[in-house]
Length: 381
Image (cartoon, rainbow, N blue to C red; front, side, top):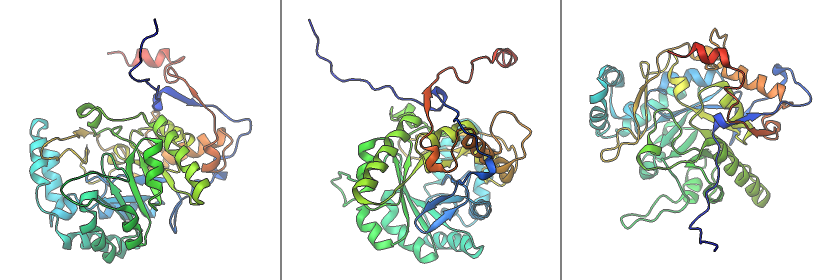
């Protein structure tokens, strides 16, 4: 007899389970256009640096923007809680693993100081860089106006999971259409990983959406509360929402794949899945210029009741410029990320990011191991 099915499970795919199919025509890498536009701002590389204390401080934000990308400053991190954040960053890097979570909980219990919010943004703007800053929904009403007055160019409203509607007994939640109208500057919102949530968020008037729940190297959300959709599938779903919303409204909302990107191949696959840009964390935390001293920790690591992050040692591998543009002496795809993207686009017949969206993707779980016998045995202890 037929039996009742409680629910159907959908197969979802991450970076390691798919591969890109080369095109019929090849393009010189230097003939590819990888510009990324959000609002009235155009960047020569489609990469955002994650709004995490181990990655972005004012000096890093300035350097990253001068190299063509956009770094996002965390307005709820050590930069806005402490007059001398370098002392705090040293302390975090020097603390033993078993003691670091209680330490972070203590460090991030220090109140955010509004004058420091203004000072950090003004430092970035004085250097002539585009300033993007991140806040959580709970603090947006308080901090966003201060940041705008200080010169912030782009606002990122970011939490583990963000939706257009929020149910609460205690307060009137953040109303995104009101925020867009009040600030009149580009707003990126995240994170989400489904078609329906993305489509509804786009309808609020935002300019970009962050895709990804739990894939980051320093994030433990998937372990702690079981949430997440692998990044290829999540990006495909949100890119589908972008296309539908474009047809309905005439407005193009940028899709930004956030988290889980470790190497050039992941970067290329994210764009083929529909991303307009990517947000990267741990690869950039390995830069000499990164403030994390060779460490990287999740934004939710300091949560006072339910930490959903961890501190990971990523080491210090190379300069920021070398990680982005090379030259590289490593063969694992962790450096010259921009060169990898341009080369991947060239062999897939894509001259622009929008043409990269059309590249064929195949399911290929063994793509990293097929024919790699000698590499495999070399890695055996």
